Length: 318
Image (cartoon, rainbow, N blue to C red):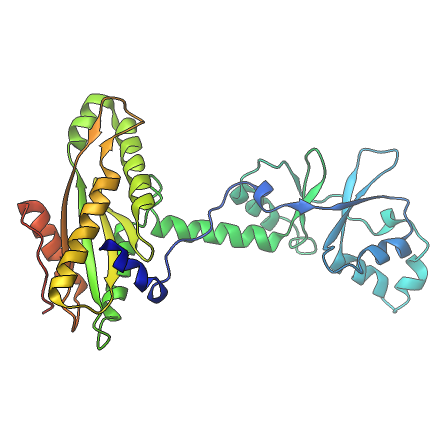
């Protein structure tokens, strides 16, 4: 009956976000031209809207520069409006910025962002050239967006398991509870505690312990029905949030318990990262009444039942 959860997916947008990596993840192929090309021909290249910049190479020299769309427009306008007439037949090298920011494909996005912001005002927002087997470029705006997204993700996602943090999980629970009302929906909270982690850390080291938790998190994520969310809410404790459609108390109890069993079956068992270790989970499940839900009450009762090992039971909202 855990499939009932999937019917609520349209009410809840799964959380998550982009993850930053290297500049290669943001780079796109760039047109490369010779420095001797007439500026008039260069202007034709920029008529294609997808061309943001052009890499320029000296025919007999080692330098590689860049011409941005904005930079070319400024040059063609000129101080007195005669730039186009003056420059049309001149070589592209005359309007090229010969000291662009050039990085390797494996350069971390955070490092590229720092280097980009260290440039002078005139060139700070130019595209970054990426030197590899072929030239590419990444826009500074894409670099900064990726960096901001990465910083935001670090505050809401646990780096070891990639699941939502405790704060983000309880905030998501409060959001679900706030949406319960006349619709008759119910919020379900499943808590899963990995047993014996202190022994694993002592016997095999914390690195192995972290790997075990990461594998459990991956299994839990794979077992999530559509519309559910998972988070790491303590060192070895996970939480799963779900919203049930309108149903009576008996159906709600059966659906919540079925979800708990499904998650436990999917997450526990032998772990690949530590042969010989078998993950066992202690779990509890609570759910709200149809008329309303309190995140604090659900958390308190869920944790109480997890500690006491009580049989699953519904939680009436206060």
